[in-house]
Length: 283
Image 1 (cartoon, rainbow, N blue to C red):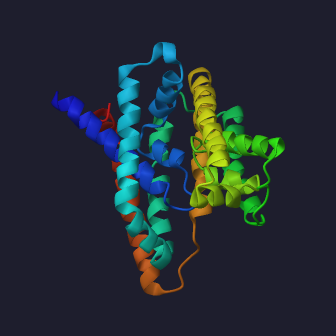
Image 2: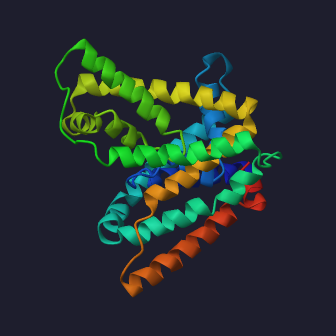
Image 3: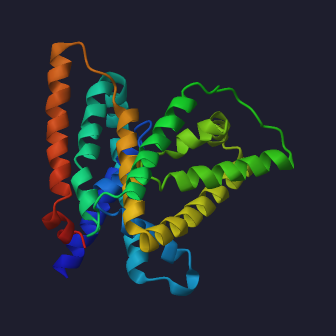
C-alpha cells in the first residue's frame, strides 16, 4: 500500500513539473514528460483511455493524478513564475536548460538498442531541425486578430488548429502555442478565451481533445513498432528545444554566475531524476 501511495505522489509531482513548464513561453509539456520519465506511459495511457472498450484502471488513475498535479501546481506557482519571467527571465531559462540537457542520458537508456546508425542519425537531425525551424519561422509571424467572422471555413480552420496544437502538446520541443502562431490563430484563440466567446472556443477545445487522442495513438504506434528511431527523433526534439530556451550569454558578471550556478544545480537534479533508482521508484 505504501508503494502505491508513493507511486501516486511521484506522478502527482511529475504532473506538477509539467504544469509549471506550461507556464513558461516556448516550453513544451511533452519535453518535461520526457525529462521526468513518464512520456511513454503518458502516451500509452491516453491511447488506452481513448479506446473505451479497454479502459484500464491504472491508466485512468495515472492520468487523473498527473493532470491534477499539473492543475494544482499551475494554480500555486503562476504568480511566482510570472515574477521570474519578468524579473529573472535569463536565469529561469538556464534552469530549464539544465533540466532538459540533464535528461539526455535517461533518453538514451530508455531502449536497449540505441547504437547510432545512419537512419537513426537522420531522425536525430530531423528532430533537432523541426522545433528550431518552427521557432525561427514563428518569430516573424504577424499577431493580428483575424478570422473572427462566423462562417464554416473559419470553423474548419479553428478545429484544424485545435487538432494540430493539441497534438503538438504531446511532442517534445514543440508547444501548442507555437503551432497556433504558425497557423495565424494564436491571437484569435487568446481572444476567445479572454472574452469567453463560447461557440468558437468549444470548437477549438473539441479539436484539441481530438488532436491529443489522435497524436497519442500515432506516437504510441511508433514507440512500439520503431522504438529506437522514435527515441532518436524525440532526443532530437529535446535538443532542438534547447535552442529556443537559450536566452544569450549574460553581460552582467553576477547574472552570469547565477545563470551558470543554477544551470549546474538543475542539470544535476535532472540527472538524479533520470537515474535508474529514481525511475524504479516511480513505477
